[in-house]
Each structure stands twice: as C-alpha cells, then as structure tokens.
Length: 210
Image 1 (cartoon, helix red, strand yellow):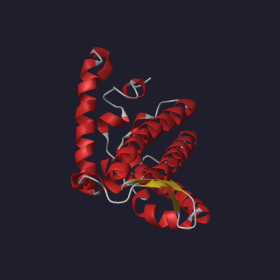
Image 2 (cartoon, rainbow, N blue to C red):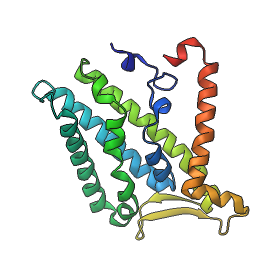
Image 3 (spheres, rainbow, N blue to C red):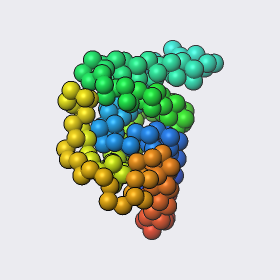
C-alpha cells in the first residue's frame, strides 16, 4: 500500500487536514450549518463516485489528458448532485451553488487520483469516503461555531425559504463575534484550527505524522 493510503486519516502528512487544498471551500461552506450539510452531501457524493468510477475504468483511460478527463468526471458528478439538490430545495442551492463548484478542483488538487493508481477499487472507494468525511467534519464543526456566534442563529435545510432556523437570538451581543460570519473571520478561525491541529499532531508522537 502506498504512502498516502498508509497515512493516518487525521494525523498523517497526507491526511486531508494536513494538506487542506480546499481551504476556500471550507471557509465558504462553513458560513451556515445548512450550507455545511449540503456541502457534506456533495463531498461524499463526488469523492465516492469519482473514486469508484476511476478505479473501475483506469485500465482504459488514456495516460495523456487523464487529469482533464477526471476533472470533467468530477464536475459532471457535482452537476448531478446540484441538479438533484435543486429539485429538493432550489432556494438553498441558490445559496450554495457558487461554492459547490469548488468540490471537483478540491478533489483533484488533493492528489488522490495519483495515489490511487495501484490500489484496489474497494480500498480507493473507502479511502475517498473517509477523506470526504474528514473534510466534512471540519466544515460542520466550523459552521457550528461561526453561525451561532456570528449570526446568532443555527439553520437546517428545509422550509419555504430554503432553510429552517432552529433559534434566532437577534442581534449578536458582541460586535467582534460578527466577524466570524464573514470570510475573513472564517479564515482567522481556520488558522487557529490549523495551528491546534499541528500542535496535537506533534504531541501524538513520531508515528502520527506518517
């Protein structure tokens, strides 16, 4: 098994949290918890199906232009997800579609396809799902911080307006907390999370950074 697939999903040097090529996606999708849930579905859908199709058809894929084919494949799968989501909740998709298009380049930029060339299809599929869940977990965790503190509410998909707000505290008590709902606040929060991740990875021992 190659180095990436042997890397720990959380603490390894090839883990999604270590490379984090989709930082832009993480920041945009964690604005609201309802957006984070939609992004979670898109990540699992695209990562899982793209990895499964690739591992099943890589023997017939040409060497030249392979990455372009994979980009079209992941973009096509992402488009199908957006189409299905728009049928269920069109208003919510209007608010998430502009960052869901970042899912395919995020997947390709992670280097997953190059690392999965020699792996078995089941291993490729399971690793892709796990990596999608790791990124999704980070997005959901940040959304649970940013939306309640920055906007004074917590939303779920559904309802006539696209989202259902579980509560609404009105004006945020502390003005600096509103910064978390902006992209700059998300970037700042992600920086603190990354620093904490690196600290914990170093404390996890020599084997944690494989």
